[in-house]
Image (tube, rainbow, N blue to C red; front, side, top):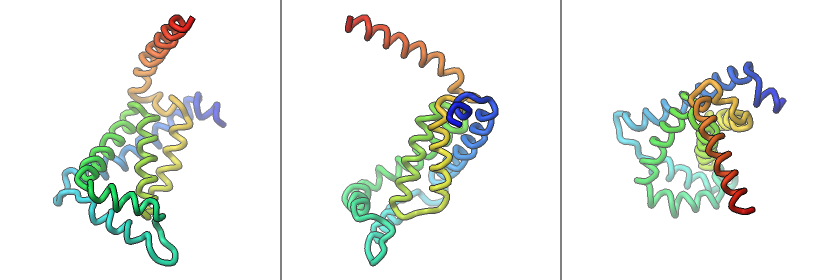
Length: 169
């Protein structure tokens, strides 16, 4: 299964569809926050997540609520910038297949952050797809800009590896 996922052209087509789907979800979410009628403000979301950390069956773990309360909320302006811009960049990266594995990883990181904050929504579904994209190595970007970037990375990596081997000999 792993070999098929990493090398099959059929898998690459399926991965491209999944990649573009996830990319569109991120791009539309981030773009809506950037150009929406009201300025994006994460403070309500953060306060709501902190409130979910109490009670008999808390939806948010105390360690994450502490992070939100002591770091995220005091720096909400930073998060008001990072979340929408990050979503847009992840979306663009996935739609165009540029830095696909990194974009998928960052998308999973953001989705896990939302899950830790007690928001289920589509986050688990997107995480599963993102893990599949990450596991596919470069095949998820075969029909994207990564196809053209891969030879550059391979050449640079080879050159760095050779210079390191010469230097350590």
